[in-house]
Length: 109
Image (cartoon, rainbow, N blue to C red; front, side, top):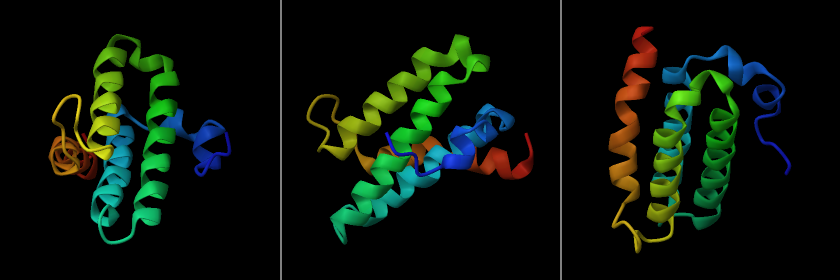
């Protein structure tokens, strides 16, 4: 796999709190949703970056007790990207899920 976030993959991701990690994932989810209809290639790039960040978060040993929740969010995001056929999820719904993490990360919690 070629990482888009090389500095994060090489250890920087583990310096972020869970709130910051989820806020960064949410940022890519937002980009994916924004471009989904307007420019599918941009949307696909955001989708791949979000998956990369999900993988980095799932590998972070600090969140051992939260892996089920993080993996479920990833599963719903993938479902939303491909039309919500399995769980009726939507990219807009995923944006709403991640918005509080961005807000909290900005406030320094």
